[in-house]
Image (cartoon, rainbow, N blue to C red; front, side):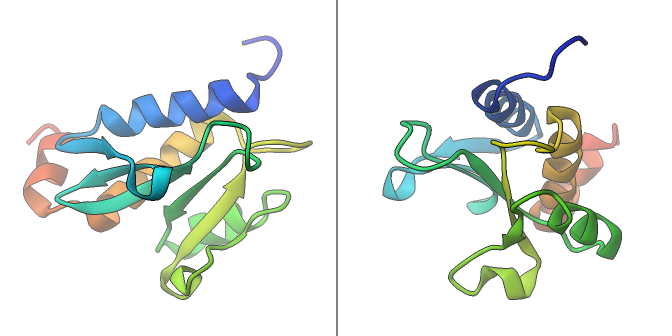
Amino acid sequence: MGKAAGPSAVRESVREFALGLPGAVEEFPWGDSVVKVNKKVFVFLGVADGSHPLSVTMKLRAPEAHAHALSAPGAKPAGYGLGASGWVQVPLEGEGAPSAELLCDWAEESYRVIAPKRLIAELDGG
């Protein structure tokens, strides 16, 4: 793959991946980009206008994925009380930021926590 993609490219990869999941739609509440399934957010992409450092926030309920995400440099439980239910905010900028591939795995995991069973079955080729 060569040199790592920049934060904007990584964010766009995660966005495109998330929007490719069954039933996923992008909305812009509060000016932030979020990807929802069944009217529920499964990925927060934040704003891409440079006013805040780029990050993605996902719900990771599996203990290994949750711990792995929190081990990324600068990662932290999401604000507004979301961290308590498994949401993790992962920065895309800086040394050691997770790869787009890993972030897409986590986005799929977040989707599987939130999506209805029929859409998960569709994702799994059912």
